[in-house]
Amino acid sequence: MPPTLLPTTTSTLPTRANPSPTNTTAADKERDKPAPSKPRPITSCAACRLRKVKCDRLTPCTACTTRKPPTECTYSTTSEEREAIAAADLIAELRATRNRLQGQLANSKSGSSMSAGPGAVPPGFRGAGGLPTGYDSGEGEDAAALEAVYAVLREGSWDVAREVVGKIRGGEGMRGVLGEMDGGGSTTTQL
Image (tube, rainbow, N blue to C red; front, side):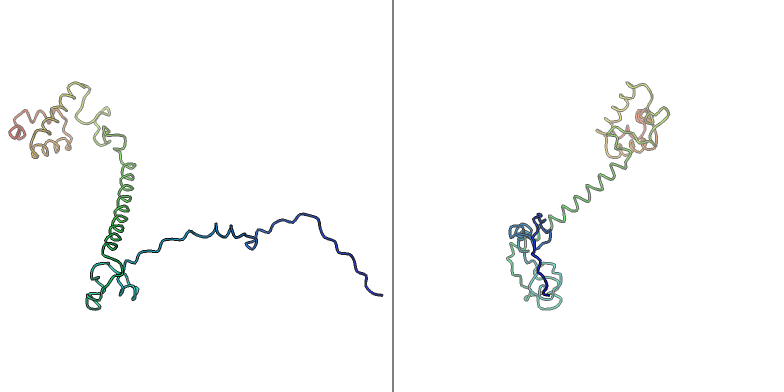
């Protein structure tokens, strides 16, 4: 008996789109293309490009002066273009240096005990009671002493300023520094 053929049925269920790349449209392909980049300027001389070595962009470059007569060192760009390229390289280098220094400055400020503000006193310079060394509770007298020391620093010579700062750094109080200046020390003779 011959085989019986069954009728074929088609499914009426909706089919999902296949997420494979074969179903992408031309518009999708255009969107996914990277933007065309500008051609990089040629900065090396012809001989260095041919030998595929780094050129220092001098005229003549160091590689050409060591290998062949310097007259054979030629560039395909004009000198103005090479100067602009060198300036751009210098600007990029300076920006990198600036960013590095700003990072170091930020790190030093965050780790410093002086980050509390310009009037902050480091812990090593505090005396009894938490006041800076050489101070007591008489605020009017302290202010007058500070003003007098400031006047000496402002109006005195460099030697006087060094001597006063050295005494202050040595832990001597403001009144002690002023007493020595008024007592006929070497600072009064130089004022």
